[in-house]
Amino acid sequence: MHLIYYQVIYQLLFLHLIIQNILGIINQKRVKLIHGPIAAKLFKFKETHAIYKTRNNLDDPNFDEKNEYKDVLIEYIKENNIKYLLDLHVMANFRHQDICIGTGLGKNIHNKLKLLSDMENKFIENGFISTTIDDPFNAVYKHTVSATIAKRCKIPCFQIEINNKYVKNKYEEYALESVLNTIAEVVDLCIEDLENNKKD
Image (cartoon, rainbow, N blue to C red; front, side, top):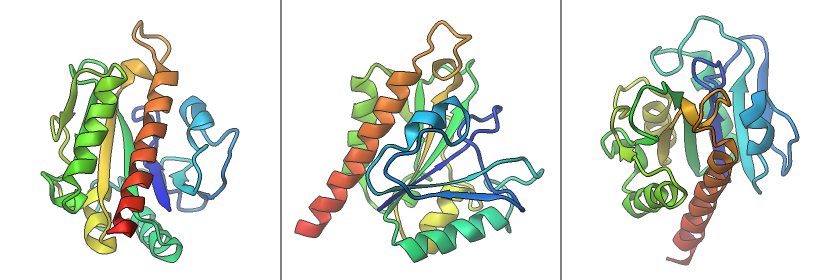
């Protein structure tokens, strides 16, 4: 099973979500609409889970040492035997990177170097030529969602930053469908990695 954690606050598109009062957890094969135009098509993956916030409580799960969102996320991962975390964000359109995969300088991904390479290549194959690892966002700060989950849950965590120009239709480079399709293929890579681990 896999978990996609996403931010959608619109400064960051795939939402850093935990509402103190309203917690959304999704575990379905198909969801027509979750939150916002990206999430509307994102969760079509077999055995994929999502957890998200629906409003900003002036907290920051990627910065705060103690955070209710991370507590709920940790509990959910353990209860549902989640094997991977994709922590999706959107970065500002002025950045030259198309995609940045933050690994905590390798620490957060538990030696999944081949999977990381396959993810990077998948984004590049699908037209996101400037795909970088740990530049400019490395997820190395110990209180980021990825660093916290990697340490507490002992699963590989990938913080994936997507350039805003690909997900907001006001930009000429807008390519939402391609972003969604590529994320779907990245999830497939995680499933393939899990299956290969079972064979070993």
